[in-house]
Image (cartoon, rainbow, N blue to C red; front, side, top):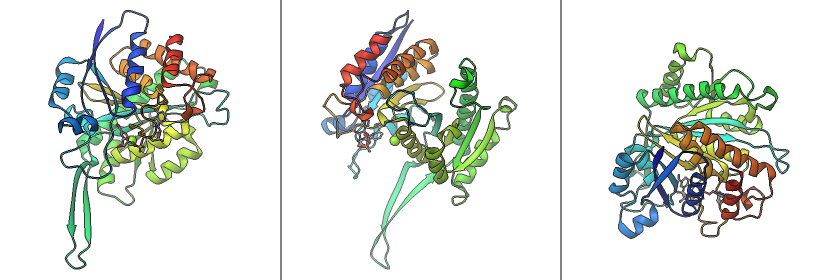
Length: 360
Ligand code: NAI
Ligand code: MG
């Protein structure tokens, strides 16, 4: 079989970690083959051409690719006329409505004191505050500025994201059955934790909470436990007791924040992959950004991007190939001798990639 994969390295370390993921895919043993198509997007591309997300990129993804690997973009913190984050744009254009973010720790000699983590965060990917409907006014009484942002929560988006969470809980439960009980982090029945803040935002988060809860009533999910956690105490509990979570489902912005927190728990943003999934397409990417502080130094941890390549194969229906990537990564983390500085090592991006390749 031949898969056509769109590559969008974009900015900063995205340009270093995407080639690492490609090298791993190319060195997979077995019948699976790849055609890669390089595609433009990002802030650097915007500065050169005035376009952050060229139409050609979206069209090629839609019409010629089975899936895509994205690197990272640098989005400036101040407003830049005509610029808008291409990853947010692609999620919208391709209707990639759920962002699937596994945070899994790998026990090793170096991190013997780390609490084991095996959770899956499902982040709603199309709405919430990230619809970017903002405005600014001047208060006539005080002449001071006032800014507003609209937050959108729809029953439609909440329901389909909720379904991904419950389906994922069942799938994780199936996969866990082959792992000996004493090696599992999550030992109980599958569980979905709904994150919200409907004690304050009773209308928007209230709709989110009720809609996701309603998904649980489906007969298919009768063996999945459901509970809830307010977003602030979610962060607190996740730090004290990450083993208390199996699948966590959250509105867009809460999910964004919680998943960076979960990355810290497993050791580094450089370890955590994600998949943007819709009914017709999947685009995977590391959770991290373009890391301008380390870009261009061959220091970036390629593991998040390499695991993202694994997630891509998993979502395209090649679980065995995905597993071989995950196992090779785990073996390198366990050995601990070839790791980048973010996880306590001294190796370069290329050396870590090579070490993983050797394990395949
Ligand atoms: P960041 O994720 O780029 O970096 C945060 C910290 O983690 C930095 O100290 C960085 O060196 C470290 N780090 C991240 N990835 C690493 C890796 N693979 N290996 C080793 N260390 C790693 O987040 P930050 O600094 O808040 O944002 C930088 C830029 O990235 C901004 O322009 C932001 O808009 C953009 N960004 C893009 C995202 C995307 O493309 N999906 C997501 C998050 C941020
Ligand atoms: Mg983020």
